Image (tube, rainbow, N blue to C red; front, side, top):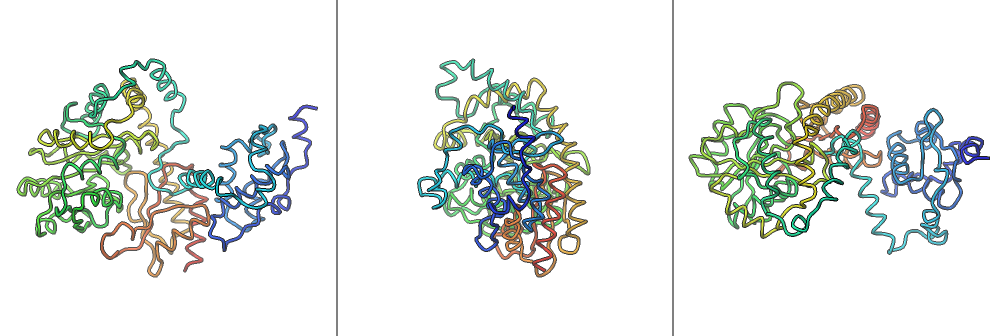
Length: 496
């Protein structure tokens, strides 16, 4: 009898069978999806669940465990990704028919029963961290499920095979010249940025760009103006220079330039997200943009423009960059490939005013010398061969649909507790919570349901004046998003 026939004839696993291996405990602080994952994986390694054995559907198991479907989905996807599960179209989910011997020996029974030893702890912690990165509603996760993996792999492999000794040695701190040319062409066309290739500095993502700005521009005792509320990662990067963080209020038109102008001592620089303000999502008005540029020229201050996800806009055409209307060379423009392609790529770029180029190159050489060359070369071809432009167009359709699913799900399941504040652009929706709901507490309860969000209150330097949630939607299908909003609605109902 073949393995497939044995699997088909195996007794289908019922919920009670699984329940014996998944003792869900809400008092331990361990996320539910992790408890489900650990229980099922342990049963497979012990041989209690056999190769070829059929698993209950996620909906059935969730009902039997008395939890939402989302943590079960998360556990199943992780087990499938690690090779413990396999899915058969029209049939269901099964324990992989032929598990490798080394996986079956991964955890000896004595150690499994006694718990994880200290030697195993780092690996377990790493797996948990990877799993957290893909929880629904996590901020800044793009559509990794629809990324053109095969095309990208072919391009990377082509360059890996052709790596010369010169390419394998130390690289140019500014980046591969061909990529700098391609980036300059891209931002001139798509973001109306005014630059040439010799102003493009390739870095390891936008966070590295922010650290570079701090190192090149700020010294201990300087004042650095930031949006309030604003991006916590920027605040952390600028604080490395020992500069004083000065919060400037944000309203429906963006940063309050009048408030910025009245500040003493005068800020050395200001950090803004004009096209899609983080976290509220508003766009800076034309009047505010012109006023901000006039302020920077008059005060000889610098503007750091973070254009982190402005390729995607759903209510109008993408807005041009602030840098594109800067006539005095006071704007430092930051872009990243993490949101457009994938975060693990770790490639971003800074468009540096010519007057600052020597300072930025010195700061770059003092930090990490240069970015990995292989991915830079691959990205050149991805841009020049048209794959990048096609991917952005295709993802706009996916993201518009996923955004609609999130807005619809929040309206259905969270209407009385969460009001959408802005969903015009980017990969996240900002929402305000009803009076009396603590956003940090909500985020903590969401973790028990296999969800992840950012509390709006954590984006303030001073006292938070709003309680809300930032919900990412880029990385999950419409079905998972709707399931997630249902689970979020249940959390909010319990807390109210």
